[in-house]
Image (cartoon, rainbow over all chains, first blue to last red; front, side, top):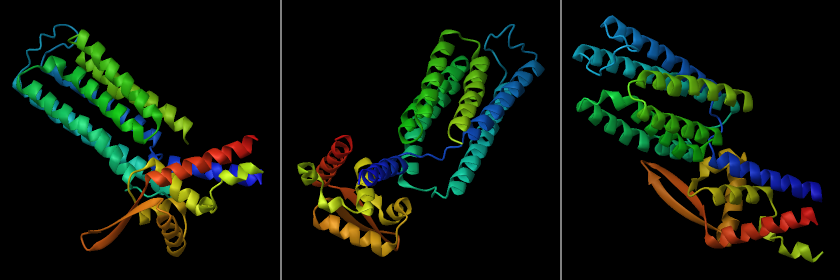
Amino acid sequence: MSQELKDDLQHIRKMMEQSSRFISLNGLSGVVAGVVALAGAFVAYYILQKSSIDYFQDYSGATGVGVVTQLTLLAIVVLIAAVGLGILLTVNKTKKQGHKIWTSTTKKLLVALFVPLIFGGLFCLAAMYHGHFIIMAPLMLVFYGLALINAGRYTFSDIQNLGYCEAFLGVIAMFIPGYGLVFWALGFGVLHIVYGLLMYQKYR
Amino acid sequence: MSLLEHLNKDFESRVRLGIMSILVVNEWIDFLEMKDHLQVTDGNLASHINALEQKKYIEVKKEFVGKKPKTSYKATKTGKGAFEKHINALEKLLRG
């Protein structure tokens, strides 16, 4: 009798969890995204060096148009590579677990994630348009953090914690101008790798 | 065993427990998604859903997405209340 009741309760909990949270997020997605971001940061540093701007010496923020175009293209490549590989790994894991990918939870998760990201992205474009390159990295980190905090409701709570870390890092970066690239590498690179490994261990 | 009185007969089957658990934490869920979570046959799920609908525990919405019919379900206030009572009774029984 009591075993049956216990089973019932367990079944209820499992159904609630499974139907309201996206639980197939692959920790390796984070690791891969982080590695791509770090590689991107190194390439960015190299681009700056080549155009005879020593990032750590005299960063006056006065960069040539060519450099900005190169950096923007690089950013787009990094974004596509990181997101693409991340999606690929997570979709694979979902299939392995035998879950469906396109559920109402996944849709909610994506909406929650992309609403702050799109507004943040437009905001960043406007800032770039006015030449405020120095605040790009802090802005990106803060908006990305908020997006993660928002989307975290529909998946593992670790994602929410990662969001708080990213947003906090963005705020710190805003107080220390001129080190955008360093903070960017820490937030999108190191934090992703750390959390990715953590989650990979936890939810294997 | 007066405690047993609080257990709701309508939630005796595991499929119904599953349907209600999914609906208390989500808004609208469609038939296919429900089936996917519960791993039951169409007929089995449909009959349990009908029973719950008759009790006014769940609300049904039928619509067309393109040319395909889509049926979605949502827990009513009555349903959520009844389910909560049932769960509390289950927990009491386990503790007692």
